[in-house]
Length: 142
Ligand SMILES: [Zn+2]
Image (tube, rainbow, N blue to C red; front, side, top):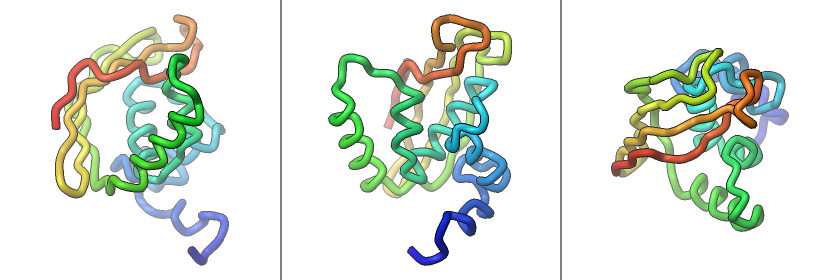
């Protein structure tokens, strides 16, 4: 793709529905910032799926029982096959700057369907300053 360095796409609206990508989920994907809330992490993971940011998806969802190469392959396949069209956050419980755990209920639209999920997030090592990570889906539809 011409353009180089991703500059142009950084100016576009963020896939998560926030501001421009450069100041919304971009700093999280680049590692310049950490998500302050579970919702912010959820949004940035959605954007990472939409943009194919595989490393970010791996880093924010520890799965010690699955080999890294296998995870990377299945994420790459998922990003290639799914065209994400938009995200709506339906509800949030806890997951704030002072919480250790939280859930986010959302609806993610893709070409051909809608995914509805309630996701569980925790802070690493149960520490108040630990980075948020995705634990898994509590409830899944679609
Ligand atoms: Zn965003």
